[in-house]
Amino acid sequence: MTAEWKTLIDAARGAAEHSYSPYSGLAVGAAVRTRAGGVHVGSNVENASLGLSICAERLAVFRAVMESGSADRDDLIEAAVAVDRAGNVLSPCGACRQVILEFGPKAAIRLPAAARSVGDTLAEPFERTALDEVRDLGSAIEPAQGVGSAIDRVLALAEDDRVLLMRLLVSLRQNAAELYQNVSFEETRAVMFVRQGRFLVIPPGFYSNFEDPEERTIRILVGHGITGGAYLRQAPNFGVPCSDGALHLDPLPAVEQRKVDDDLKWVAAWPLGDLGAVSVDGFDPIDVKQMRGISQAPEPGKTIDLIAKLLSA
Image (spheres, rainbow, N blue to C red):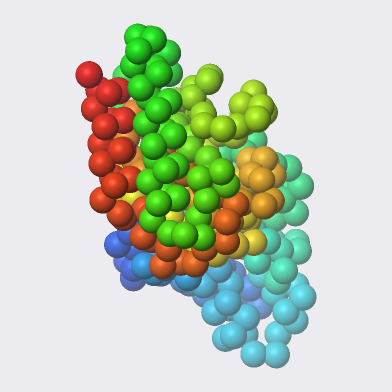
């Protein structure tokens, strides 16, 4: 590592100490260097309305734009890095890479393995480097015991228990539809994900009212998206599923986001301990208060408890 990168990493590590991250528990600091040699830092600042949170990298870039005066903003940023409190290099999300590209089309981004140009990091799907690079999520949660066999545990359920599990998923849709008149049972879906390494995946056959469940191949990185966030924090979560929506702390990698139905309007998700998570999504437009109400209401919570007990028996 060159001295210039070390200086930038040290600055980012110092910025991480100013993080406000009570929801994810992950403090991130970032530093960018302009072509004029200025160093600007930022930390992640979260919000109870998750879509209003801001990543450390974006805050650092915005500060550089604001504090650099009349500098050439079309080619302002020369280098960028993000780290956790321990100084481990993290991988910027797709949104942050896009912001860096806006003000530094030739900028270098320090990734865990090596430095790369921002253009190169956006030219390929984010998922392809996720396992090696997304250390923020990997370090935020310890591997659960037996996660390698989580799908086997689900598929080994007795036939009666499998039927009961499917009924409980249907009940979860009913719980959501009964809460608000503008949420219809027919326009909701329920999905169970189980932990497989650093991903949450859908066990074959465990879906509710999918016309073709084989097409539902989405994989969610632990901590990414609404369902991954519920699992990481072990708390109910809610939000808008589309990449251009709000209420996201961390959107899905682009290659997985493309698999999300464009017409979906909301998602609510609940953790199932170390096994995985369950989500309900819908096509009816509802507001933030209603999303929160579904995720926190007693009846869906009771259904989730029954699912968790069934799987842990």
